[in-house]
Image (cartoon, rainbow, N blue to C red; front, side, top):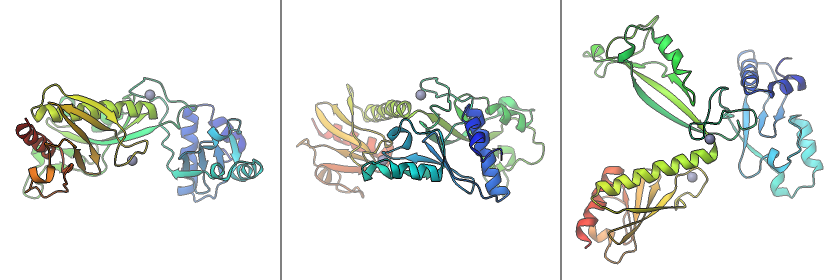
Amino acid sequence: MLYDSHEAIRDAITSLRNLNALIRERHQAGYVRKERLQEWVVLGRFYFDSCGNCWKYTGGSIPAEVFPDLPKVMRQTEFSAFIKRSSLPSKTSSFTCSIGDDIPPADLFCPECGTHWTVQNCHDTVIEHETRTVDLNKKAGQRLVDVVGRWKMNGYAVWRLQPGKSIRNDIYIDSSNKLGWIEPEGEYFINPGDEALANIWTYRHHKCHRQNQLKREQEYFQKIFTEAGFQEIWLSPIENKYCPCNSCAPWFEVVVNSIHFTIGWRKRVISIQSTDPRIIFDKMFPNEETTKSTHEIHAWGREKCIEYLSAIRKIVK
Ligand SMILES: [Zn+2]
Ligand SMILES: [Zn+2]
């Protein structure tokens, strides 16, 4: 079969476009035609299961990294036998994968470093998803499908129109539709003032993602301290004190007006910490209904964070 033999998979890994197509075909075969497929370990990075899914090896030990000479295409049974034969310490011989391959479509590039995605680097991805409202005013008169079709040419991210109610315009507001969202039907032509809801998936290398994240977080907290009225803000990234994994954003040590803070996200709150003897959080904010102690307070979002910091600035001289 064209998607379930050694040869087919060897052919597929000659280009990212072919690999994308193979994964799509296996998914069709498994999910639409309910075929039972062979299981494969591909590039030492991905696992193709019998129902048409592609999984990605994750965590500390990845077959391709533990065994640099691993064949690029192996049946699952061959792979298992190979692992058994290798006299690895038990901790590295168990591999974990998670469903979903995170493989970017061919032709996209990483927005940080500009490198195109290939079969060689397609495992090294961090995907960021956002939903954005896009102004379509300048496209008035054009067919929606054509405009959305051109979104796909955008080089570093996958853009798709939100399914269902994806178009908004004041002209659609009435007593039963207070916000003016509609589901475009048939051959929809864009009206002046239309907005569209787009889902955007951006692919970055791990390293590039971390750099981008650091830059954004640093700007974010810099701005918070600025808006709280501080000048001469010194920020330095440190490990995330809540979750030191390799995807959560860093925390920061901050020095402003000779006050030393530690600050960072903790799930949905911003933890503000200081051991400065002039700052006793629970005494300073007795009426705030949030987690607080001598050296820490949790701010429920950006505005609260600015409010607390600005209060501290006025009290601590
Ligand atoms: Zn990159
Ligand atoms: Zn984490």
